Amino acid sequence: MSSVPRPLDTAPLRIAITGASGRMGRMLIETVLNAPDCQLSAALDRDGSPSLGQDAGAFLGRHTGVAITSDVRAGLSQSDVLIDFTRPEGTLAHLALCAELGVRTVIGTTGFTDEEKAHIARFAEQAAVVMAPNMSVGVNLVLKLLESAAKALAEGYDIEIVEAHHRHKVDAPSGTALKMGEVIADALGRDLKACAVYGREGVTGERDPSTIGFATVRGGDIIGDHTVLFAGIGERIEISHKASSRATFAQGSLRAARFLAGQRTGLFDMNAVLGLA
Image (cartoon, rainbow, N blue to C red; front, side, top):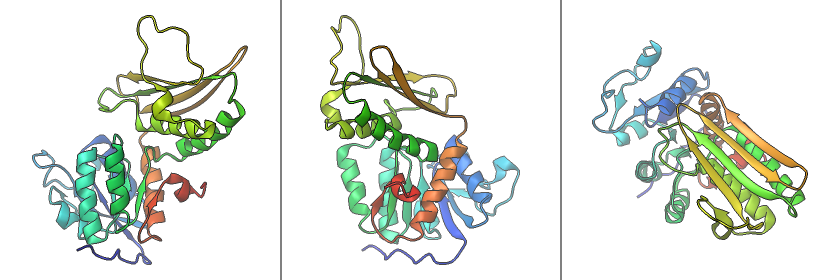
């Protein structure tokens, strides 16, 4: 039986972080520790992680009193909001506990199937969820620009989406690139599943003007670059976003967590958080 989400009308907001020893997890922990209206309530990591038992702020030379643990239930029982940037299977397991315990959730994980997204929507009926493929404020503003650009450039322009990420990213194209494609396809009245082209090789023939192309680059420590190219005759328009630090995703996640403080149930995106809906 699920718990009723706790009313969050007093500070500080108690936030749990998953993947506490990873790159994004550490950035989230640092951001929460530096936010005067937030409190790090739990730092969660997988069984077998060499970081288990360590203070969550040790990498910063800070003592927080919060030890990294794999006991998700115990961590969530002391938390108001969970911020999760892991992998789909882990996020879904965490979300089931959040729904049971009445803990709101910010999901930055990507790579969900349509069926898994449907599961998330059902969990959101029990405790509020913000889910977005990219928590950056800038990226979400770009999505609004792409909607306008696609409508204005609906005829005579070929659309290509190019994204680049670090060598450790496991899904492709990125969730952000796919969201960009969805926004553009919706604006044009198309179905992305029917018009997307994810790779070209050999003799492909002339480009079908109704398609939306995707190109993926993986290498080094690239945080995240996305460019949408509208290529016409005699001109091309490029709308780009380049992330130079994971701090932008962490700051956006905290904005989402603060937004959830005013919500008990429901599934929201960053448009709702930023008032762009």
